[in-house]
Image (cartoon, rainbow, N blue to C red; front, side, top):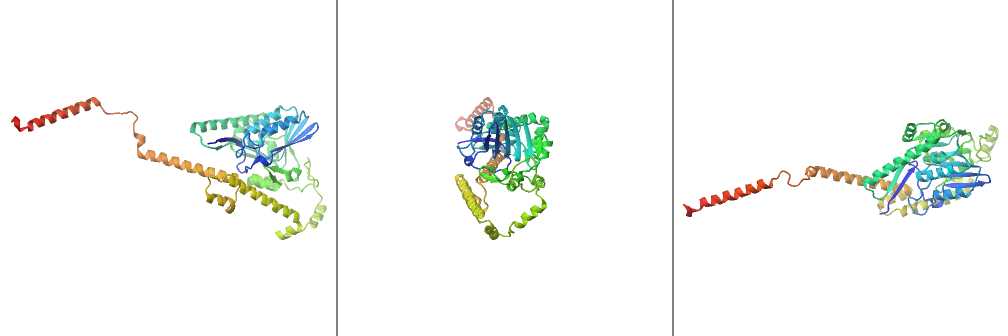
Length: 401
């Protein structure tokens, strides 16, 4: 049976999708300088669901292909991913001769923070998020107890590698870093600076960034709104929203200043906007946009159903029907739910087997054969019994009287 192991540093709510459609980075060559846009899940050397994927080796090849640069700005909007891939990217950036600047424009979570630690200077948008927590391991296949113990040890070593990277940049002890990772720590804007993960804050926020309307994560476009709603706990979401009250910039550019429009001009623009109260009015006002949304929605739904069909083998039909139509979920969520169900069933089976063995009394059976049985004494007793029997027969013989 084919087995796969992946150690990740990624929020649990992130949906895993097929990486064939996109890669998680983009390089912009600007002559003496370059920009690295790190968007999406950091992929491992071997993809979980397929054997055909874009991985960090392609990333390193493209980085080396840029040649010598004076500076590289790493723009980050990533929820993390594979720890080994993140460590490889970290090492590649550290060894690069360019001055590396890290800029968090949306979210920098889990394994993405490892890449951030490779930057000589680090900055964060005022409403952007940084999150650090412990790595986790994902398994597919059958493993024996000693193998699981080894995997647990490897996971602990992976955490140590993350702690080491943090200690290079943070003014914190190893114990403090372990504690913040154990607690799953979230920081918004200035909080990330205060914690030492970043050096400075950028006043412009993610909502006002040109990137906010062009972020692609695993082939999915993320706006400011669904970035906040999809990945962020409720209390952190409120902090982000409280820092995101500035209006959209005219150019939509990401800058170091917040550009505010005058109240009069805003009122004039609001009067020109159509008032929309239902779907019909929305379609009438923006027919092309609504048509494109419908086409995109159909395409996304087809891809979701196709992905479910690819992993349907071994999953009960009623579960598949529910996932397809009644309570739609992604193929990744369905696979995870089925894995949990299989694990629960296996645990129940093993617990029942242990209980049956204990109740049967088999555990009390000794391992030494013939314990408490003296063969010599038994032979003598048998001999005496035979002699006594023979004597009784002689007494009963009438011919001897």
